Image 1 (tube, rainbow, N blue to C red):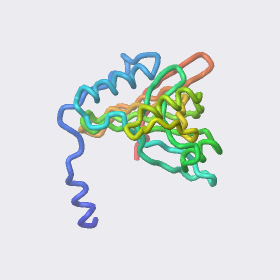
Image 2 (cartoon, rainbow, N blue to C red):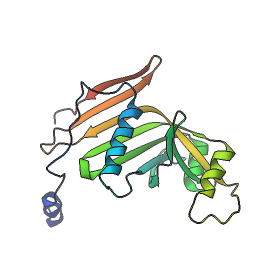
Image 3 (cartoon, rainbow, N blue to C red):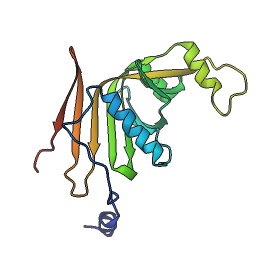
Image 4 (spheres, rainbow, N blue to C red):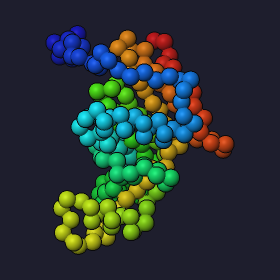
Length: 186
């Protein structure tokens, strides 16, 4: 191992006191669990608990990721915003598949959600534009709010012993189904 590898291995990982995740006490709707975890992160004072890594696909199918802010969550999905002509806006126009990864280090929690995005209407987009700190009273026709409509969720509650609890939700014809996910022995 290199000196860097040794230094990285020695860094602290998770806090000693982390919440648990009981696979037998899960809500049927994964957005309820997500909102509970988000509220916990907000209440803990975590900095930018609504920040996430947003992943799209390039034209050759390679992943492209950047950090964005969650704007809202409703029946249409998880909202983000960007310029239609931005790199991510163009990628979403070409291929609407996307994913979000939230990570709250303070609680050892991570949420991954994937699905397809849908452009929301102009009124929602312009209301979001007008709420920005740099808004100067001029509408921006290039501004777009998108909603990621979840098809899959994955929740990970880390543990100090690295036997993390992972729960996967999938949307099927009859609604959401969840199961405990395991990592193959290696």
